[in-house]
Length: 170
Image (cartoon, rainbow, N blue to C red; front, side, top):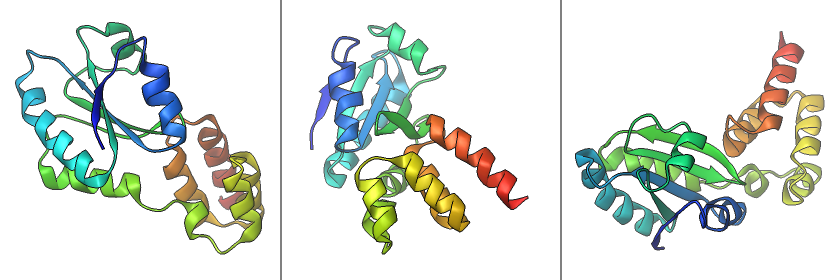
């Protein structure tokens, strides 16, 4: 994989749309930031080895993206899947942590690991609401938590179904 410099103008195509096909890791950085310069090569090497697209956003040149995604410290790294942030970290972390971050991001999803044809069909169709309804009906907490992780904490369905799962269990 390669890395690409992303701007406000290319954000939608390079990050949001692409993340519907494959995970995208976004590195929010600035030229003057020493920790950013230390983490950058580590991210580039690790994402290349993991086969993950790396999008680099210069926070000085793209301040509206920094505001939109709540960047308060850099380097800030966010992983996108299905148009949403699914994982993130801030700071220059060791290579072993970057590798663990990428391993979690690239592990097979619930659709690839389930033996349930009804659940698989819903997930393959991108009908996450139907998948959550099935899992809630079956009280399959483990699978619901896995799907929460795949979609990320900001996904509207995750917020809705976390509350519903909690109400069903307690």
